[in-house]
Amino acid sequence: MRRRRTAAVAAVAAGFMTMTAGCGLISDSEGAPSPSPDPTPSFTTRTVADEIAGFAEAAGLPPGDTSTARLPKGDWHGCVAPWTGYAPAADAAGAFEATVMRLRQHDWEIVSSHAERDVTYRTLAKRGWKLYARYHAGENAGRTVSLTALQDDCRMPEKVRGAYEDPA
Image 1 (cartoon, rainbow, N blue to C red):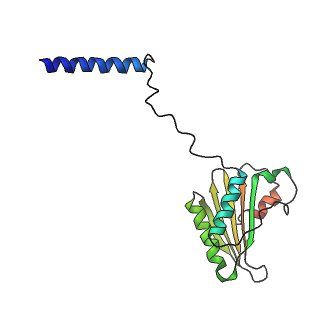
Image 2: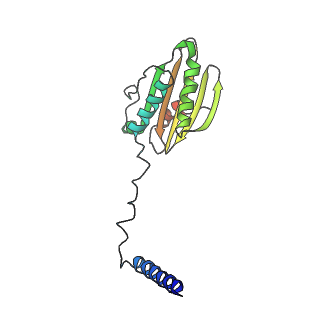
Image 3: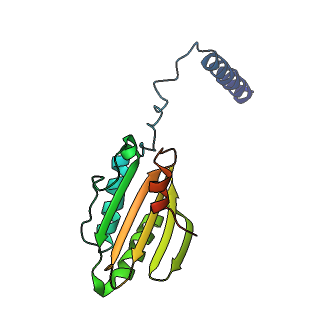
């Protein structure tokens, strides 16, 4: 009998605590963990540029040119992250594909992929950006890799955008 009464008192007490905590009469904030900060950091032009350069270097490509100085003038430079470099002839194609693989391992998704004569094209996307990756294997042009990321809402001239986009 005593066990039933103890169980009944415990059940009533638990119900009372639940009801008062739900009404704000008892603070449960001391025991509750605080909400975690936003786990997704902002994906800025600098972040994208650093990511591209880091993955290219990790894949075996030498440091590339990340400046926008050679691009036509415009206020759209803030929404483009270019990287261009010359690949070592020994394994230029392998270094290009390894860069693309590293990008894919870090949430860049392939949108399109094809090859045309001596140029390999890969277009990737991530969090509001498109990355136009090209590998030029021509003898006259050398072995050039260009990785140019454009923010989706970037208002760059169509002629300039067309120079980066995959022609297929």
